[in-house]
Image (cartoon, rainbow, N blue to C red):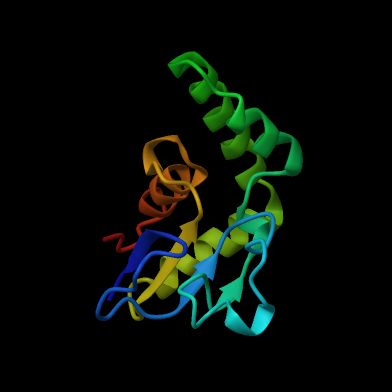
Length: 128
């Protein structure tokens, strides 16, 4: 069993399990009832997305130094009580169930989901 980190809207893979959208906003122009069938997500967990201010900051990243500043700030947000408990719960669930977490960004290396991957691994999650 494991958690996969995916790009929302991409084709699902065999055994992926339910998708959890860790984004600030639902996909534009997609009806709520089409989120799952369109490979976006089965449930929405915006508590694991960057704050609106950090999303703006991430979009402006030009350098590795800028990216590291974003990562540090996002890790600070994820250390708050609610996100930290959610990450702990998902790490635990990854040992007995398949599911995936995702975001819309094309490049995972410059997306908050890369930080979520690291945070889950640090909590002992089975991350694929």
